[in-house]
Length: 131
Image (tube, rainbow, N blue to C red):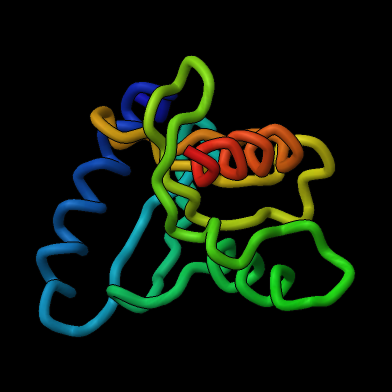
């Protein structure tokens, strides 16, 4: 028996549950990402963040929106509005390393995160506050 994609995914989910339980009162949150594996070894990525803390995308949006030359509305961060076929979305932040799909959204109802181009998200937000 060796490591394969299915085994690694199951192991990652198990490790995440165990570590979240162990860290529940510590003020930290954990997320398990991908990793590398071969027949005898699996190296997994684990990310620790402050629980209830500000994410990097959230901070980047807040700081970028405060600049005078940006078109990002400061009030759009954490705002919920109608966005195309996705329905109601909440803006979670800005991802500056992504040149096209740079706004991080949370789709309401299914609680999945999606990314979208800032120009169309800003347009939808501006239209939503007009009504």
